[in-house]
Every structure is written in structure tokens, then in C-alpha cells.
Image (cartoon, rainbow, N blue to C red; front, side):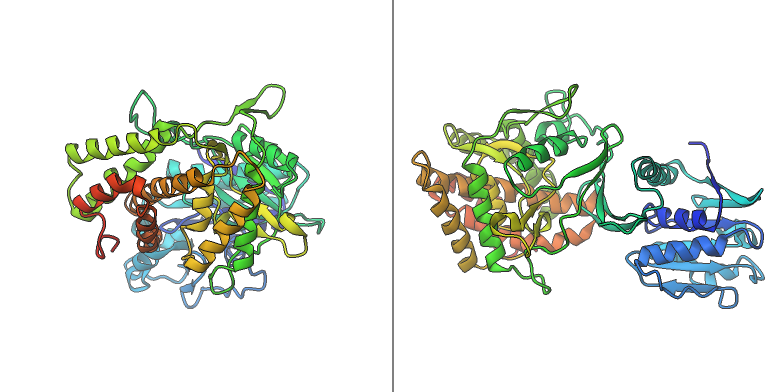
Length: 503
């Protein structure tokens, strides 16, 4: 990938560049800031650090005399100034390798230790150009692609009515999506930017399809836009969309707030969970269309949560969890029996109630708006993977929140609230729904135990493994229903169930 060049017309442009790169860099990145005195290296570094800390008042002293200044931020940063370095070998004494292994290294005057810096570094060469500066950014292709992406988002904001907006990291998730909070320069209310680049195809697994296709994972932002339209039309609190680039996967959407359904200690707030269950009852009371027009040229067909999708998700248990747990792959016989059991369970769903599934309806994706009334207090986000499938799935997702332990008393209250509202429909079959709830709970938790291992081993995100014991507790609850006895017996035979299995 060729080097990236930008003209920086003034100091504000240099600050903006620092803020933009704070959204693109990751732990392990080394940034070499090259340029003469007064080129703007320290201005860039200060803006970068303040953006990463989301603290415009952060003290950023020059490390000219100390040689290195460290910052314990969302991503740890070590700011090096090598102007007074006598020899490149002194870099080891400054703890450079350790700092780089844990976070980001910003290096001013990199020429003083050129032979000791990583070959894979990113270089920002800043030169005077008339009344401004010209920055040339070079480095490995994967790092330049990240930088190019954040600069493309800046250009998108400038084109769509948000010039000079202040951008701050909001969150990332288990996918490639990321979110920013956008503060317009005119002081108007904040917005949320969804950065959702198109998925890259993975290895072909079956029927000529890769995992995202089989599991119906959204590969661009069109499904989000379509389902958002549907939810808003139903009178539910989904975010309005203010600007979009469907091809690049960039949306500016309404900021529904930052309060969730957990308290400050991360524990569930009963009222908010119960109202969320009532919202699902409201959503399931009216059937969803199979297709939604996004514009004159694009129609989104909501995919079915079909046999292929259910089974490819449950296979994460045999493909990822079992090999990690036992240190050897699942046998062919184990995989075949597991698949046959799921074929039988999925057959039970014939004739079951189906409707729109938001798919990940749990605490990270629910906003609480205290100032509103009724169900309007519940803000919905992150529903791009929505499908048509058994209504019990989202109820299982909420009652068995993957990120927080739900006490049995609250689980009972949520289920009672949902059932009470659904009984108004004479067509609602409560007994079948409760069976389906256990089945969908088992399907979801078989998927999750594999996902936690995959995130750790493939994606370098070990933090999700803390959810494993909870997921197994939920799975055991699901397997208590008589219809799931074949799966319960298989889990016992393979050693999946047991007090030590979730460790």
C-alpha cells in the first residue's frame, strides 16, 4: 500500500490528525515521529494522548529530559523523546520492548535509534509546506489500512455536515465493528458513528459457503439500516440515521444515551430487565415482513434462522471448545452424533412460533432512557444480525444474559412478564414456547462456549473467557427440559458437563 499523504494547514489540523490516529492504533504499534524542530511532533503526540484518554486537560510533559513518559490509558502508551539518546543500545534500558508488548510507543527523533526500532513501525514524516505542514505516513500495509480507514471516516464526516467534529472511542465488540461518539463542532448534541467495514470472506465450510453466510451474520450495514427502519416504524426506540455511506460501512446515528440495564457495580437492575422482557412481548405480537426496502435499489431480505445457521453455530462447541478443553480434536463419531442430536431437536421446532429475532438482546445492546415513558425507555442497538426464527431465542438471550449473572428470582419475573403479555393472543402456545425456550437456550449456549474460546485463541481476546462458567450454568438449566435429554446425555458422555468443565 503506498504511503498516505495529508496537508495540515494549521495546528488544528495536526491536532485533528492526532485524534484520528488515536482511534486507529493498537497495542504493539510503534509510531516514529520524524521532523525538524517546530514541525508539530509534540503537538501530534499531545493530541493523540488526550484523545486516547478522553481528557482534554491531560498533562503531557515533554519527555526531552526524562527520555520516556508513560500513560496508563485505555491502551497504555509510552512517549519517547530520543533527542538526547547517546546510543541506540540505551533503548533497552528505557524499557522499550516491554512498553511495546503492552501498548503503543510514540517515538520522537527516531533517527537517533533507527537500527533499534521495529521494522514494522509506522512513520509520520512531517515537513514544512508553505504556511502549513505535509505529513507522509508509511508503514506495513495492515497498519496503513487502519489509518486509511480512520482518515476516510474523517473525510465522510466533513462531507456530511460534521466538519471539525471531535471524535472519541466509544466501544468495540466481538466483531470487527467499532463505535465512536461524535461531538459536532457547533456544540449540538452528540451522535454515534458506526464503523462497520464489510466482512472479509472466511474459509469455505460447507455448501460452498463460509461461516458468515451459513450463520447469516451481516456482512455490511444494509441489514442494520433495514431493521432500524422496521423498529422505528413499530414505534420502538431505535436510533435515527443521520448520514450513511453503505458502500464503506459508515453510519452516523442517534445517540440514545449511555445508561444501560446494569447498575454501577455491573449488577442487573430488575425493573429494566423486566421492561425489556415486555418489549420483546410487544415485538413478537406483530409479525415481521420478510423483505424491507432500504432504497429504490436495495431490498434486504431478513434471513431465516434455519437448520444450517443453527447447526453451524452449535458446531463451535465441537470445533473450538472441545479441542481447547481436552487438548485434542473432537472425534468424527462425536461430531456426527452431536449433529444428529441437533437435527432431531431442530425438527421439534416445526410449527413453532417465529418472528423477528434481534439475536443479541442482552445488556450490552440495551439502552435505558429514564426520562421517557413505558417501553420508550428502552433503546435498541446492535441488531444488524436480525433473523426470522423462534421467538423464544431472544427471550433466552435476555433471561440468560451472557455478560452478567441473572438471579433466578429475576429470571422468573422476566419470564412471567413476557408470558403475561403474550397470553392476550389466543394463538400463543405457552407450553410449546417454554420447550422452545430451553431448546434455544441450549443452542445459544453451545455456540457461546465455542465463541469464548475462538475469541481467545484466534482473535487474541482472552477477556471473554470469564463468561465461561456462567455460560455452562445457563446450559445446564437449558438441558433440564425432558426434550433435551439426548443432548444432556451426549454432554455427560463427552465430559462437557461437570463441575470442572467450565474452568
